[in-house]
Length: 177
Image 1 (cartoon, rainbow, N blue to C red):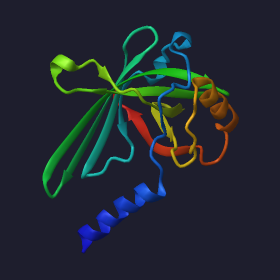
Image 2: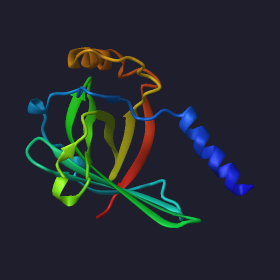
Image 3: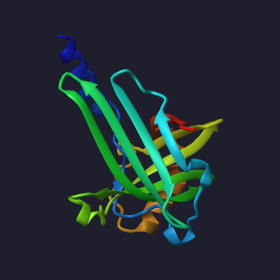
């Protein structure tokens, strides 16, 4: 019975809460991007429990891009499950809101580690207190449009970025010193 309730709550959370919006266009222009050193480092989720830990590491890849790695560790009835994902990303500022444009790096094998997905997801980020990083994502529950160009997407984001529901709360992270 307890397992059924947990499963139901997970399913309902995905129905009631949107997923990150994905687009074939970035919101910003990589050539205009720069590294925000305040987000560089290793962070762990403040929502960590005895059964789940989530960490994110953000590194400077070059003068304009980040290398981002997430590690999700879950301990359930089947044992410990570790899921690692890797991304490349860059920062954009729209209406004084700091955004990460990220793309998943798909690893079929170590030899083919350079395959980047052709879709972007977008996360608002801010340092909310000493050594705490807050991440929210642009929700697919808010944006229901297929854009024909990057300019259309950017204009839509500029016009709607301050609207309630535009972002879904992802998590707050504490910096690992």
